[in-house]
Image 1 (cartoon, one colour):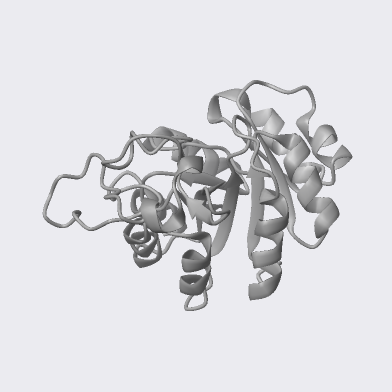
Image 2 (cartoon, one colour):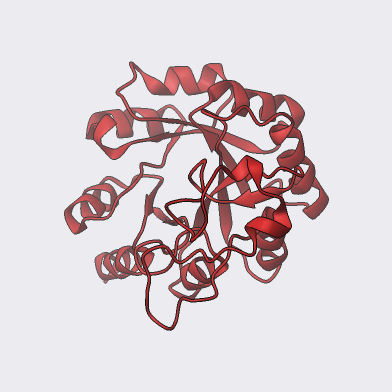
Length: 244
């Protein structure tokens, strides 16, 4: 069965990378969530996509220049102006992990260290995974492939998967070479035959960001390992209809 990962939570309907977006992903029966992790000025792991807070909050400046306490004072409802979304804030990864205790969702953590060199990010994330005993529930991805290899070396039990946006030649071979169990390509960067070949070679395929019905149907028809979407409820309904 093709699994559904909620991109930054249910980012199409709720403020991205907030607890409210993750709650919604659970409510609509997604199989997992995808989120982004960076480090604050005081070395805390926070869940936010951009290197700055400008787009997704009412603040200005780089994530790395805020302490955890400071960044959590910001409102993280950048485009959702309804009364429902006024008190959203940037969660810590620990806060998300505490919530995960109450469900069985998988969690794909994207390390946002392709632009900012967050020293110790890999060690901190792996340490928290081990603290909570989530080795079998977490997938670590990044466009920084050195970073995910570092994670594998720290804890081989935690799955790693390279993110990429341009077509790779035989990406399943590359994945095997770095001990990754899956690849996370941009949907535009992978053809049907490549998805099938990767899976036939024991490498999972989880494309991003799959928001259109025809894109979802294409991957469901292929039996693709999973896909990442801003609209997990739409994806779940499509998958259920195909079962019928």
